[in-house]
Image (cartoon, rainbow, N blue to C red; front, side, top):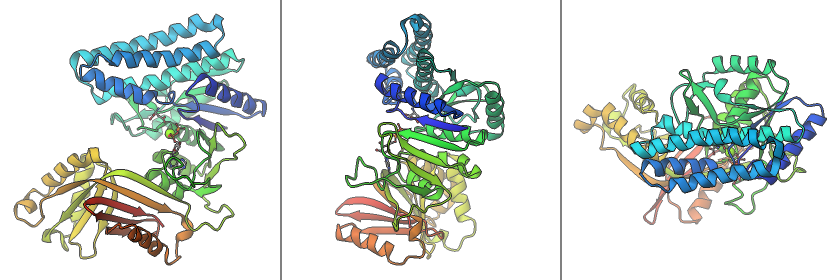
Length: 456
Ligand code: ADP
Ligand code: ASP
Ligand code: MG
């Protein structure tokens, strides 16, 4: 059993969906057993976010976006589905669109968009697309069937980025897949909580859906089909000379994705890693490219010292410093518990050996919550001056240099930092994990603050 996942661009138009259907036919003819996870059509999740925001702001223009959303789907129906199936398919799609339109009207009237309503709105991208593709498959003579993952993947109620209840979900997935031998066209990204409300797994979460299914079903492989030649040494949109990697380890993939390589959604690595199921990253538009192979091993036959460079452009830094944190047992535990209680995800931590300061990097939209959590947790220390007032610094960036071959090789960080220095970048903080997988640095140069992350 394989799980194939096709991202937004791969299923973003009738022409591209046709390529996907041809691939499905090819795999079927090869006698493979597989399921297909699909994203919303490219750009449509962003459009849904925009619709929800506009409706909540009382901007009637959300209706124009809704029209565009409808049109993109009907173009596919007309191009790929036989006319005798149109009444059934159009009827079902119209029912889903009516639900969406009512939902948005409700948001427009009350001028409020709750995270739960937002997830329900966003789910329409994957639900409508997976349904249409399953029907386009049937129209092309393939035994495809629509599968709404809300009935299988159960999460908590952290809308927008829900956490999976693996015990329940795995059982549901196994049970469901033994009951059908049709080719499942599965909604990526969406799930439901115990009360049956729709949740989402975080932006980019369709990769994660594929991995959850693969681990539950003990699949032989996961194939993530996207719009570039696999995992490259850097984002090809940013670095002209980036080239494709043949093979990387789970750890390298984790580091690259965590530090900005959008080609894999970071949580994707966890379920497959625990079962040692390999992932292939393939290109829907370049079928001759064999793919990047992600497994326990990092060897790819090359002597590359580093595998890649990732970056996150917009990061906020919070510095906690003061005499009150030196040699005080439990200070870090209190700090990270306080952040966890506000669900703040810490991207990077540095602590000087003097223990005088701890620096954390967070997403900018979580920075205020992080500051409040720290202010509350250290109220008395702040009052007594043992901890200095907490400031949030915005507009920073992180760069990660990744590669297992860098371990035990001296001089790599020296080369990196001298490169940064030559470019006038003044490094402010550096951190390296004991696994030698992570070096961090932050800088402030010419009034412009930056932070750099180097993974070795
Ligand atoms: P999909 O819609 O198929 O899930 P995404 O847009 O989420 O695709 O991810 C693919 C994109 O990731 C590529 O188009 C590329 O711009 C970006 N990307 C960032 N870093 C890398 C990298 N190191 N290797 C390949 N692609 C990368
Ligand atoms: N459609 C969702 C998003 O754009 C999930 C995905 O594409 O993986 O975030
Ligand atoms: Mg993606």
